[in-house]
Image 1 (cartoon, one colour):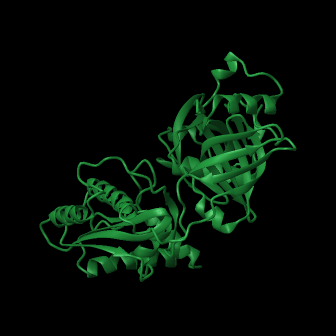
Image 2 (cartoon, rainbow, N blue to C red):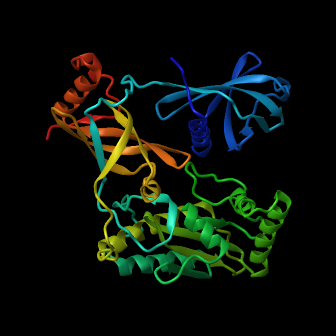
Length: 414
């Protein structure tokens, strides 16, 4: 049965589809068309599409549905602005979800208590906070960058930077804070400032599968958030782009160096030398890999060893729970900042008859009037713990048929 979601979760589900470029199916003209959300605001959802314009009627209501993170989402919306490549529809009043999971979520039993701890050590650092999250785990092996050899790592950065740029550097926020606009935006978002050429300006879209670079809309939104109207905000972005040209910048790249939920600095390359090719997307990928390895290398070499640790164990207010995960509420601002999607956690469930240990991952996050909600997906649990939890929640034995529906929970013998 479809479930009507609250307005805050509606915004979360639509924004997630936008951020992850989720294919959305639109029913129009008796057929189905794949469209993608490109922006969401308080009154409209904007889509990119290839639907024949003749099928798009202003004021006509259309059906949309898509799948995200194990849930099917459906809504109706009215056409506001039909266009050749883009159209806008009204923000849907009602959005429905129908979870595909076999294990339904239930209100927590009265004697159930839950707590979680972050996977690995968590640090309380005096660095700028970032909305992005780097779990500070060993990155994928790289043929170019070796984290165990910090001096060699720096030398390889120099070599690769000077091959395509006239200037390079690594800036750490140990004794200074972000100052310039591009530094502040790269730090707070965890995205790269990428200027392929100063004549083309800031990219209008992000070609990466996950949000990786700052777009012109990010800069525009920064100025809108300061209270400027859109025309003045556009002027400020144009002024910023003009300043790069006046400074003889041909190409520029700033890659934030992230550690957990902090921006500890950034790597930068700039080209002012005519004749060198513009920075391409391969350059972004190369120096992103360097930033990840450099962050890990600093940890290996004791850069954070004297930093205080965050509390390890947190009690949670469980909203609902299933054999595959739980949803909890949190009001602690520091904890809300620290908990990012993709964060690994260990979970302890305490019932009157038994304690259950599980490993999990934060899979969804949305906020409502000062309170944040987080969904944890279990992905590892001892078989006896899993059977107890299943029977404790659903009041029946766990069967072989049920074992086929264990979505993502790895049952391991200890």
